[in-house]
Amino acid sequence: MIARVAQRMSGWVGWVFFLDLFDGLSLTLSYMFSKTVTERYPDDEKWMPFPRYRGHHFLKSNAEGKINCVACELCARICPCRCITVVPHEDENGERHPRVFDIDLGRCLFCGLCEDACPADAIALGRHYEFCEYDNKALMVGRDALMAMPGKAGRGGEVVPARLSTEADVTVPITVGGEGADWWRNIRRR
Ligand code: SF4
Ligand code: SF4
Image (cartoon, rainbow, N blue to C red):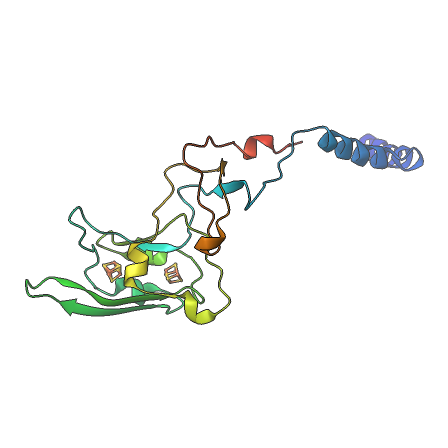
């Protein structure tokens, strides 16, 4: 009962003296004098995702450069979007590999089920996230392109120096040797 009266009184006093307004303004002012968290992307900086980030797929290969995939089609079966196409092929040594391995990124929802289901540690979702296209057809990615894709981030959760390269379409290469900044550290929490 007392607590309810005190709450009602504080609400009434706060309404008369604009306490909520001053509370909001104090937060705004504190942000004005805190370190900025604005990321200068894509000109100078770039976000490095965490290793657990699920970006563009990539296909792995062994030390001899041979693709790990054995074309079992489990990834295609488990995919909820039906966006993986695998056509198996058996070479002269009886080894099975995909002749065709296509992923339609326009339909993919980046759930990671294909990575979880793969028994050969052949497919994974990596760190690459700059693959916007104007044409849906360009989002159909084949085997060779998947093998050339960068893998998972070794480190992540930071902003690293980068530079925009218009010659390389929309990708923003990381500046070699640059030190990262812990972006999350600068986010103010109340
Ligand atoms: S991430 Fe999910 S939706 Fe995308 S290809 Fe893999 S299983 Fe299919
Ligand atoms: S990527 Fe893995 S699950 Fe998919 S076909 Fe190849 S071996 Fe099978």
